[in-house]
Length: 507
Image 1 (cartoon, rainbow, N blue to C red):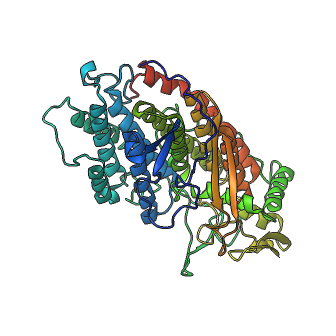
Image 2 (cartoon, rainbow, N blue to C red; image 1 turned 180 degrees about the horizontal axis):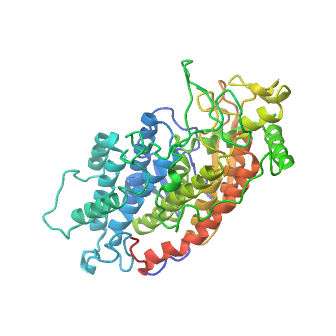
Image 3 (spheres, rainbow, N blue to C red; image 1 turned 90 degrees about the vertical axis):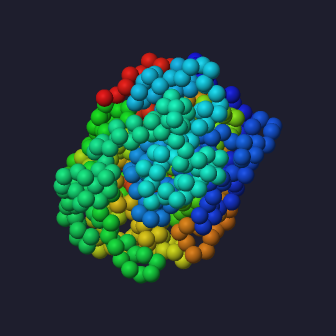
């Protein structure tokens, strides 16, 4: 198979990025088939005719959203779960390609030309997806079994032929699962020093600051959240051990560590100016800016930036009329780049352990009045700095981990660059149409149309949204965006090597 040529470009199309239609996302569980139709050239393509990789991405996203419902939003964990699926699917597919090699077995599983049929690809991809998703989302096995059957496959099928597509798919998934069993994520809760819980920290991280006391304004501070029923809880640093997870393509998680950020000790004037910039942005958000914050915050149904950018990749699939070969490769690249970007970002977060605007506003303006968001009823008011609140629900005031660098910016920069490199163009040509304030305030505002002309502009919107929302100082986003782009550009030749058959199996 030759290296993918730049995909054909089409006229700007209106794509929904949140639920594949120009309306707000439904509040209940979505089906695994959000878009009823997709456009290919001038032909409307029924959803049932979408390629099998596209449809399995929908199944994976729904499993991830249900996982969030059970365990809360864990963007780092989700990035690993999505990476496992994308790699297993790619490895199963590679056995039926002319030149591509799998990540775990190289070209040793390649089947003869006569067996490289669409039907065999679909069988192998589906069994690989099913096996790896049951592993990644153990609470969703009933749902996954039902989806396997809905897609026309038997979850209990076994093959007497060890070289048949069912066996190939299951072997590919098992090899990926086994390889990642002890990758530092503590997915099974077995790491010494942990709490014997999946994905629990085992490095002994403890915050310097208390919920109600700033010991060091340069360090991360936990925040007390309030549930809708009025009960309180204080989440700790989410996966502070993530810097120890084995990357997919990177040489180490520290490879793209950011330069030191400004602190009150090294550049107090700059840090204060950055804090003032956040206050200024949040003192009078427009309806469109609120829509931007919510669009990028939810990601969708809290499946994180990995989930969001894989949705954008589906938009590209519909726009450019992908078949299964192109989609398998595209999702493989986007999911793995997002996973590595999260690792690099978390290594920087853990290394510097920096504070967020919540802490900085209280430090710089202690005893003074600032203007900010008035709360769920809407509006902006003068409040004591100690009561300043970002534009975010009380149940999720600020993401529970250090600020520098921004995960949204780093992962968005990386995925946007990956999409540009894969398609051969930065052109995206999408629009997001949504109601303002629907996730944050009691009364929804007017409809806003957000233009997403390019992948890079979409990443920049994601980065800007984090300062608008009061989650990050602008510098967290600017540096993260740059590093994400550099990471993806550095990684791209490694993905090309898998496609052209020159990659070697990573030990």
